[in-house]
Length: 312
Image 1 (tube, one colour):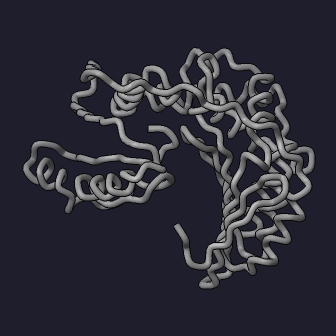
Image 2: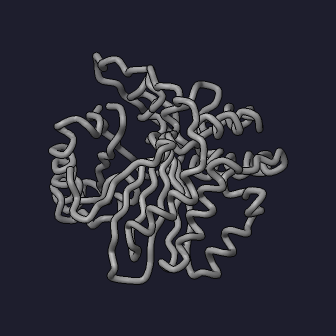
């Protein structure tokens, strides 16, 4: 699907590049996506992609821990990252005159991230606490159980944060091996948008990323979820006096011709929303489910969720 003003190319080392100029304000955003998430994990190593994401904020030899964050803050920008089932991303928003800072740092930590053993243990505690905090929500627990029931074979079965037992056992070498397997230019996509000249930006990307060596082909995800033959039900009991109900259906991959019609159906039923990153914040009071269930006082809240995925 063509987008006006979108420039796409690929560097010789396999790094895909998407550039979109916008000169309405003197700012620019830099995003780098790696084709790795919980979909690429094996039993015993669940949550490792999310943990690696945490480790990439621990610095490099060139940018020791905290130095990049300070530089971004001094420049008036922000940075962060996130992990999903299908991909991991890191991003910076900066004044356009300082966007080189993002290119310099992201190209460095693609290949030179430091996995200090003490930092690994510190993040084990952080991630276990993150999981324990989420477990205080019965809705989160229900979502995890429904996901696990929906996928019995495919790696979408396990949560992105990982199972507790795996988080207790993953070691530093496991994390570093995962990093070296999936963090390479030929397994990444760079997206830059904002106030810049595309030709000049491409030259900068070539300067910072062009000399990085490509990695070997990443392991393919061979598992396919067999067709579900019967209804599956999950019943969780606890002390929460609020009742939660979730009804889930297997969908289609994002490349399927029915994907966008289903996006529209989701918007009609549960309210329009963005896809993928920040898609749950829309007002859905005009949606059919809200009018049928909340306006009639059968429920206090209702929502729907249909996100793009590599596999159905």
